[in-house]
Image (spheres, rainbow, N blue to C red):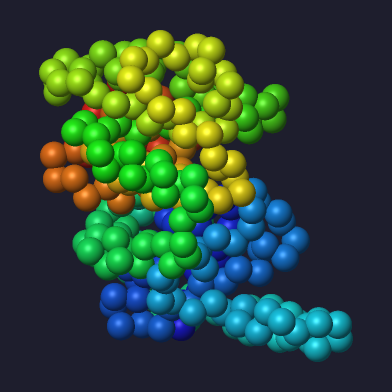
Length: 286
């Protein structure tokens, strides 16, 4: 058995699940493990249960309480220790991780489609929402379907511009979005409708100068799967340096899609060097 730890926000969880699902294609029993969410509150917690995922959770009996729950957790942690522990060394693609041996426990981010691009059809099915859309999101979905050329634009500020994260992640400034817009309009040479997704919609309304724009004012972190789904419905994408909009673009099934991604993915130089494989090869870097 191989166990893959699930942690972080929804975008990270999707990368980890995709990696685990690809491992399972080798015929080895693979489980995910969600114990991290008991103590670490990442955004809205474990979010993959809203999808049609097929891998089982190592932390299975979640409804136990009191002493029974404590005994169960102790059992899980002891069982985990007998597996060989692995840690992703850095963000660069590591081919040996794609062939992880049986009886392993691994922690990492696996933010490179080379780990799972060969099971794209499977992931497109398993990352389908299994819960009804909210009324608001259904209205946006209908509006997207009515457009000839819809473009998802993701602007991540909020946590990215905090003092804690600004020197790690950095954020895509207005200049990036203006260049991306100009490039997209040059390539398509047709009227476009922009659907803007952000955790700072007020800033977007004040600073963006896009014509024919819809600001998707949904509470992103309370229902993030809906925003990723809505992004995936758009025909083209201008993404942020974020795993969140990465998945919105990757799940888009338009064969002629144009995806524009930032040249710089991290502000931290070391992480930036490791991250060159995160955007897909056919995406345009600006």
